[in-house]
Image 1 (cartoon, rainbow, N blue to C red):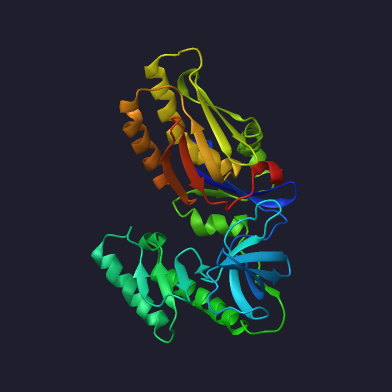
Image 2: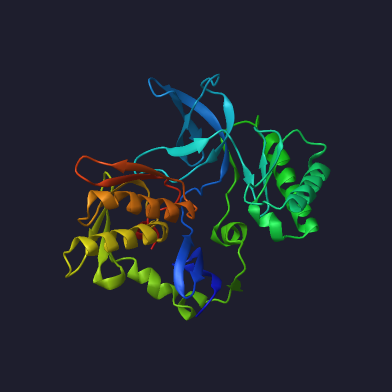
Length: 340
């Protein structure tokens, strides 16, 4: 099965979306009962945390934690947006820098100005987009970012998207000083996120049971195995612990240094996909197969190129004294084991 397919279905009663590329699962979104990233609350400041420069907030869904609280006093209402999923036993991570994001447009109330994605290089297209932006934003003091997906879109679709996000932003900001803690938006679910973020040309299938028909369920089931096969009989084991995500690279029957480099490079290329599909974030430590130190730069280059195409914010931290490689990844998804 060649090409890109977006399948919209349900898993265990929850809305789900899968992106297949040439028959292989590339991305997976499954809803849950937890507050969604992107949800907006009118929260109430509760108590500051000394030494951390943050404050706990009250929301209808429990405690939230906000950093950078200059000027915020206990009892004061504040608009915040969920930035990811809370770690077990911890408060919901939120930010006061709210974004209203859609397929073509992002409204930025706290950052005025009109901006166009740097991925759009064509000057004629950029000029046309600026004309649309000025036309729709002329009466607003909010900011706007036009996303890379605008490059192939119709002008009226872009304009409509800007208006919809601007109207939503205006309505939410008008509720900033209401009484009590309240959830003002739910955040986008998997089907809307698929439309919003998977913008390359693809066949879209929505029939009930399409996950089974297109082999999505079989590939999801395979993700319950910590072992991820690589080319040439090699594999990597991806195992969450309380403290971090451990990735152990094995070469199989070939213990040569050449086989070690090959397995490490294969891991670098597939690691972003594996972490996306498994919903894993936080501290990640790679225990790589043996390879000469002179090949570390090649490995880092491959790893950097792979994560450059990934949608989840990830910092490549570097090497430890023991020769492990460390990463720090945003927790913007729940572990797959928690949603199945």
